[in-house]
Length: 296
Ligand SMILES: C[S@@+](CC[C@H](N)C(=O)[O-])C[C@H]1O[C@@H](n2cnc3c(N)ncnc32)[C@H](O)[C@@H]1O
Image (tube, rainbow, N blue to C red):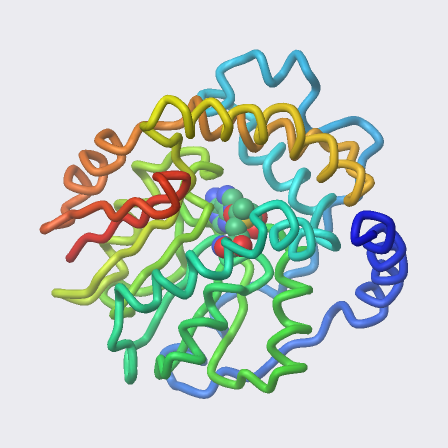
């Protein structure tokens, strides 16, 4: 029954989002104000293309080594933005929210901290940090269509301590040592150079500040892994693409980008190489998702 109602809900939602796009909220603390005034206004919208961001052939290539990865990732998220939240809830069976809540718990207490949530998308994790009492949350993402939705959500829920800005994880327009906590949820895998992004996170953190990376992984238990692979490569890409009316190839890209991305130990090493100390990894839900935490 839910599967019959969801497409109706999504199609009704499209026009709705469109009419609400473009809202903004005012930063409530000085470092956010100085940052926002130094940024150019975000105006670029990627025109949804009829050509898939990821064709079947592209997905056979080295996804993470492609020189056009950033452009394709941006096109893909622009195209799925309107249904991103619904698809997340449905296809993770609500676990995505639980994982983000757990991340906030791992990082608690966050009261009084300045949080920089990179690749914030539609703002789930940014909102969770604000709810937990962060002094300010700056959400940064390079896809305007995702940020449009994040802004609408923040305005509706009167989350006045969150500011959303367009920006690139690999070249953050922030001063050195400007935040206490940097987070990136389901974003590092999509960044063209994760090493460069990690170095940026280290640069913008105050001494002793913390980084949390939340990312999908492949379960280590062979049986769970088999079921997980089946779900991610056969079922989910079909239902998700149907619900999102997606032609970008986003839901075929997802499992492929997870299986070909760095493994858990490699990500830990990359964080250490970027200068993070006391790096630890916390697997969740049989290792489908892992939180990596490090200290600047
Ligand atoms: C899977 S979404 C995750 C969104 C959000 N963090 C969440 O938990 O739902 C990945 C996001 O990363 C963003 N992204 C990818 N590469 C980026 C980059 N180089 N700089 C900024 N954002 C980037 C995309 O635009 C997209 O919104």
